[in-house]
Amino acid sequence: MEADHPTSQVATFGSDQPLQLDCGIDLAPFQIAYQTYGELNAGKSNAILVCHALTGDQHVANVHPVTGKPGWWVTLVGPGKPLDTDKYFIICSNVIGGCMGSTGPASTNPATGTVWGLDFPVITIPDMVRAQAMLIDRLGIDTLFSVVGGSMGGMQVLQWCAAYPRRVFSALPIACSTRHSAQNIAFHELGRQAVMADPDWRDGRYVEQGTHPHRGLGVARMAAHITYLSDAALHRKFGRRMQDRELPTFSFDADFQVESYLRHQGSSFVERFDANSYLYLTRAMDYFDIAADHDGVLAAAFRGTRTRFCVVSFTSDWLFPTSESRATVHALNAGGARVSFAEIETDRGHDAFLLDVPEFFDIAHAFLESAGHSRGLTAAGELR
Amino acid sequence: MSVPQPTLPLDDSAPSRKRYRQKGRYRGDHLLLAEMIEPNSKVLDVGCGDGDLLQLLETRGVDGRGIELSREGVNHCVAKGLAVVQGDADTDLVNYPDDAFDYVILSQTLQATRQPKAVLENLLRIGSRAIVSFPNFGHWKMRLQLLVGGHMPRTENLPATWYDTPNIHFCTIKDFVQLCDEINVKMERSVALDLYGRPLRFNAPWWFWNMFGEQGVFLLSRVEKTK
Image (cartoon, rainbow over all chains, first blue to last red; front, side, top):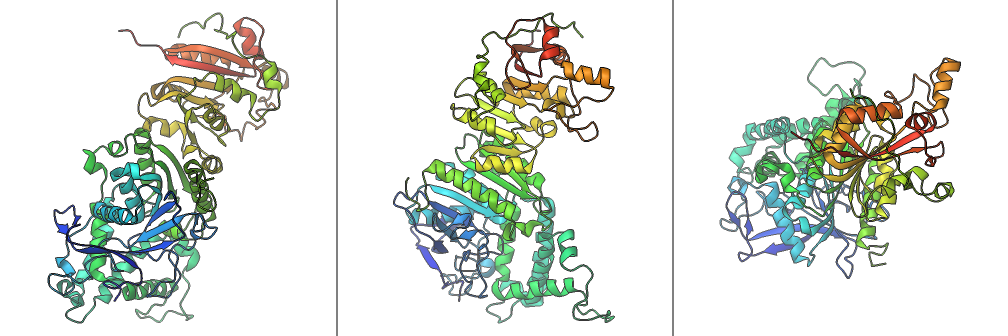
């Protein structure tokens, strides 16, 4: 089972190296599942950490072991791509609290021999980043050439820069924010309530009781998926077109293509994702607020940073709108950071960061190229 | 409003005209701006376009940042390794803290802002000095077109028609000097340039520059407030 024995490399940390969680608990032992692509150069100066989003995982650019589908960011990561695996050493780890091999609610609790479930401590974005830093230490890397991620991954990027400024040479936070908005918390609460309202959820003990809250989790995914798109994208893709029929059936079947699409999104998601993990990860995003950790002054989180930033947003993203990215940029500027910011024109909504958007690739490529030049990296990842 | 100064504090130390004739890598007016900036200072270029000026400044050890409205401009800048933020001078300057930069440059952009006065005030709040260049609407060609032709002026450098120009707040060198006076801004250096971005070298009274300067370039600083 992927949660305990992932199809990935695994770094294990014993009780001598606990993960100190924000909730006050020391998590030990624990493990981190991760994938790497490309080769680390002799100077260890070409490592890029990719941070995955809410329902992503470490399988960035390889075939997924559960779904058999291509990696979730093959558009961006690969030979000759902006995150060039011929040039950089790419690392992506499953977040703490996830369900693809890093310790989370779907993992076995060594104290009881059963699945953690809701006994797993509530984790935060800083906890995820703290675990990643321990992995990077384990890999013998001091400074990451870049930390890259979108959405929840972008939150981790910003947290890296706030918590470990000297270990991040450049940062590419995409379609994200330094704090989760009230609207976004509201959507997450809707999703969690859908999961917990499913009688098969069994107060989180569905594994022992042989059930799975697939209906609740499916509804949560359907609602969330709408927030990843845009009115224009939905209209272009589906309009009011019917699904395999000419006329309405006067029933509650999926008459419309958009209904059928959403149902498919829901049902395929539940096959690969743990319901409790969904509760924990959405909660981690809700709690995220970098300014709150710096007396409410966001700029203080980034004051004096030497990291080069490139902040990217998308015009039709209403989950993490451009205004959020601008607020991040203003704080970075106020902190004296070296920051670029680009808003990419697209009608594809929040999901645009995962899709084929050439203008976004151009920016990512140009930013990493110029940062790589400053870092002395060349095509082979060696010093020029 | 005070009476404009009888003469502009013209700068005799401007580099020789010969220099701007050379077809080098950089634009003549950019070289002039760059010479006004002390090495190793921190500079914000508002409306930085493709980043050519910032790139020139970075060769001189300047720590440069930019703001640019157009997405294409930002892309070009990021590709050059410059730190440029997509934004608008009218709305985004207020978000920068006081005294964040040694110099803030507004090159050929003032006339396209909605609130030139507020923008100018912000420049000198963010930076201890500001460098502003703009096309002079008092140039004789402009005057002639309006006087004789009876139509809104168009020139080689300002070819847009009145209905599609982004330049909504044209001013003359005289107007700008008056505004600086009004908002307590000190003019440290000023240079009038001809059509090709070369400084006018000969001595003349201020009305001459207002008539023959194709654009004006001003190095500004704050007048410390006395209570």
